[in-house]
Length: 303
Image (cartoon, rainbow, N blue to C red; front, side):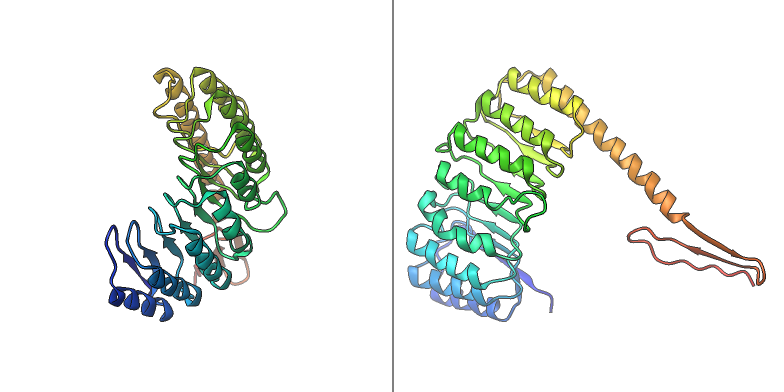
């Protein structure tokens, strides 16, 4: 049986429900576990963490909205992640983690072999937390790291911390999605991020919704998109003091870049499909083989 999902939101969980969840984790029948905003006892949270540690099928773990509500729970989650090898996405949005909690969790995050997506939005983080997060964005040629990172609504991070993150993003060899919405970034930090995006070869999505930007930031971002080849495909600028005209210009340029990339991809595919044509004159046999990714090997023989 293929692993399924358990998704519960905003409920008070009984001991019997926790036992069922843990049994499913141990039986490797759960791929997604979401307990968003649920209430459970300290003892039951420990049981869930032990189930997470034992599971080999769990790929997504959602503990958003206050599930990890104290340092003891952070420690238990960290221990579970040190043993678990399957979790790819971890969501802790809306947890009162603080820098101290992240420091306890970070050793498990940094050595986890499968983790590629991390949501630490609204976790009361500051600059010390950012320094730890930068370690999860290793530079080119280093170990594997995050592909998706959410740091929404962490107003305690200063421009110094965001500058440190911008440097890490510029040199990260894997990060594709970065969500920084609803942080008081301002134009200065936006300028740092523009340089980071221009340097990055992988970042495709940047969310800057509601971050206190003005037309000054937008003009910098427009110049970046217009003059530097980047991987960026989506730039979210809603809820900022930016003119609709500038937002539309940026959107149009990003769309043009995506269309050009699709055209090039189609041309490459066409070349690959015609790259192998072998004609056997003696037996009048023609073999057509395609070598593109996802293509099957075709053979046509004339008798």
